[in-house]
Length: 181
Length: 181
DNA sequence: ATATAATTTCAGAAATTATTGAAAATACAG
DNA sequence: CTGTATTTTCAATAATTTCTGAAATTATAT
Image 1 (cartoon, helix red, strand yellow):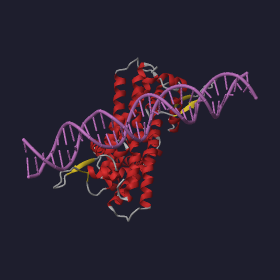
Image 2: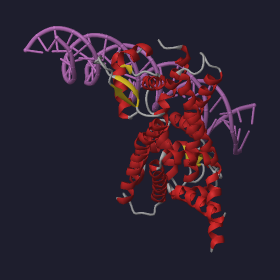
Image 3: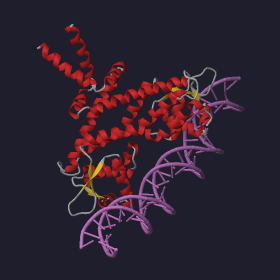
Image 4: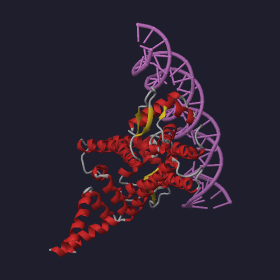
């Protein structure tokens, strides 16, 4: 690996974690490298820095683009494609959440929906009830996520920082409304 | 596969999704099977129903137990271990979230922390700043998650159903407090 | 058009991960 | 303690995923 020592362990770590995050080692390393690089990087630079083949980098770039995590940056007088992160860290994090939801949760909801609409056996078996329960739970989470996803980042950050404190606000709302009556 | 047709596609699906969820195909199928079974199942039953080896089932059960997703249920007059889900679907979902957080996010936070405390180069490089930013973002998410995790399920469900509506409640709180002044 | 630069593709090789099944270990009844 | 039932382990093998590198394709400058 041919990269500055201060980022090496960071890049290696993202490679190791890559598999847990839905992409492979090289893709994880590529993402880490692009995120901490001030200048956009071209494919040859990435291949050289990580010590992997040019073909592998090409496939990895495709994958990161399909996740909408990177984009190209034209550099005047250079025909190569240069890649940089597709937005702020906050935007990248939200993008990862949205993409994982699409890949990890949506297919399960679809399956449950079609099983429940089109049951293979009479309803009210134990299994059927549990699938219904699972469907409703996933749907609740996704409705919440859709809602939250639409909020503007500042409100969302406020909400995050509030944490469980939001429960107190809900209580307070009730008390205030009661008093007003 | 030797299971009732009404759950077969559900079980197969959980096998396919398994890899995206951090465990392998067999473990995914085992989990699905245990969740939709009214009676607790023993290892031989599972091996037979899924058509996999006894050894594979033994390893899978270990893994599901390490995720705290299943537990044993003693059956009078039977020396075999019988397995059932370790709690309600809600509890299982929260458990999956907690476990994935531990495996997917905590290690990255640790790494960032140690890199930032013990920097390999002078601070204020671009890379250093981005790592700091990433650290702070992850820490914010985790603090939020810890907070939320402690809430009781009913409040949490209310909050989920409220979704972005929580923004309105925050606004209302401000308005009510202002009026009271 | 032609030549050159850059990127993508993909078959085969390498690396990794999952599975089997038989042997070892453990648990327990009589 | 002995014998039997049950579970676990793990070396060998199978299956899957990732990676390489050369050939094919695409893009662009002259």
